[in-house]
Image (cartoon, rainbow, N blue to C red; front, side, top):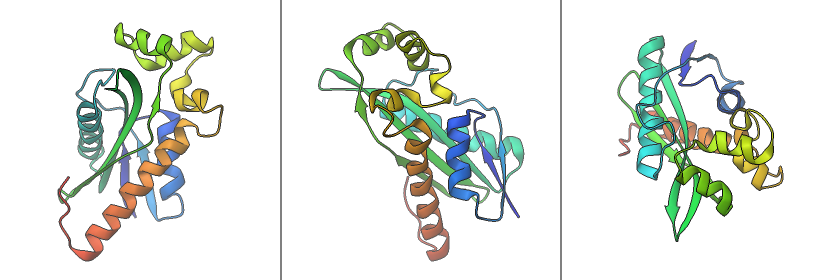
Length: 177
């Protein structure tokens, strides 16, 4: 049985990994690790770096076969702030694969709160009057009227990671990340 360390205990992210790897013969271990980036990543590069760091830190901390890191952030484009999300999978042999996901623009009043230095999750809690949006539907769930929630958004990324990893390790092809 292979051990997969998930670089978070956030229920939305953990459930995404569980959804993809549940049918396989894996031991899934959520663990708290640092992303080694800002609490609110503010670019694709920083968000991707956070995902890779989470995957590597989880792999090491749990002495696992595979580490998975998922990171949400924001990116400025065309004078708007967009939600971005990235994932990374690393294994004990040094293979690293990564993938990005859906993007949606934030309403100006939410974007302003993030630009003012608050984390998106905190701004969303204030905006909706709800608690722990980041652990449930996420901003994507609110702003898509429930058509896509945060776990579903990350499931897509985890599937991209799993597929690339399977392709790479079965075909012995080195994919640059």
